[in-house]
Image 1 (cartoon, helix red, strand yellow):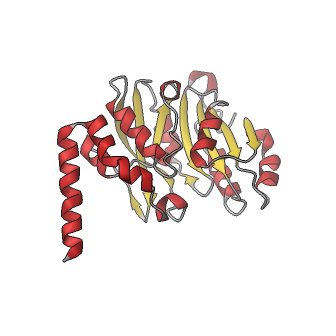
Image 2: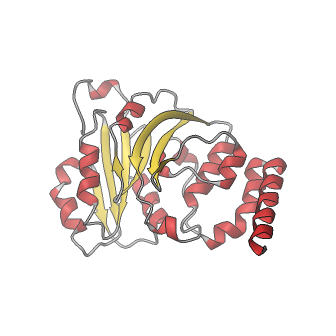
Image 3: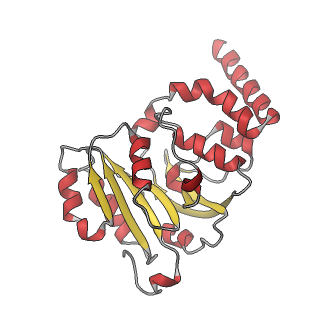
Length: 244
């Protein structure tokens, strides 16, 4: 059990924090320490490591008394590892954090507001030096994803869905599209800045070619004709101005 004991943990739902690591020795301890500092008292940490060889496993062993579960083995990418981790969580809520990210105090401030398991709650993160803020429409989600470091998912989401690993960078974007479309869930923004997202990782510097190819069809499937038409028009306009 991690965090302050000012409020009895049994009074609050457990939040499973999932970390996926690979050769993260330089940043991992700072990430873990930011979890340990949280005031929310009912957290579990689940770590899936991709067979690191840089000291990451040693750090995990040193922290084993504060980690509910960890395993180190080869995987087929970040979303394969995240799917594996979901098989070991026990929390009512699920939160994904990168090993090179850190949590702020407002993580706990938002965590204390988790009430409705039909709601996907999210806040802001610091990315590229700016706060990410809310999404106000399906079209906005079609254009840009909510990074998973901003989101608290009800665990029931992962009884219905898993990450589609064929999308090596944007499987989380697809998951959010499916959840937005799902009438069992709604999204609710709470104005707390809960983490700093490291924007130098692979998801920030590379493109998911297959996802970009499939994106128009996925937008049509989950958001309908209006959002699809606006997206197609936007892409055409960007291409037109790029040629000038």
